[in-house]
Length: 124
Picture 1 (cartoon, helix red, strand yellow):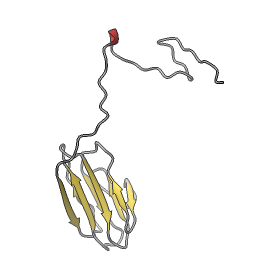
Picture 2 (picture 1 turned 180 degrees about the vertical axis):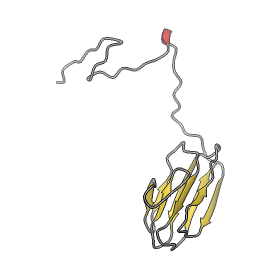
Picture 3 (picture 1 turned 45 degrees about the vertical axis):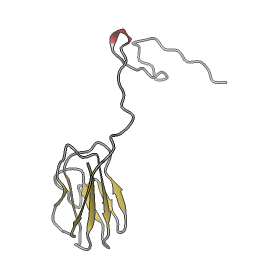
């Protein structure tokens, strides 16, 4: 049987999770269901050895996926300037990547050797 652990409100404790709320017990709304996507656009981007925009920033984006159909890795960055040493993920040949939910900024990428397309699907 586990030992009971108690904490004192407002006092930090490594064994107690403190949840802050609104005074007076007002409920804090928490979203648990993502919005459904009603539209997709698939774009084929050819292999490139220079920084290339794969997706422009889009506040209406609900999700995005990238599929590397080529023989060489794509170095993809959730941000403005992807390089061979500054990237978010290296998508290997015949691999798939899902952009984290909620990311609506620019997505860029490049290859060390231009060889094969990357298919970008944006869900809105």
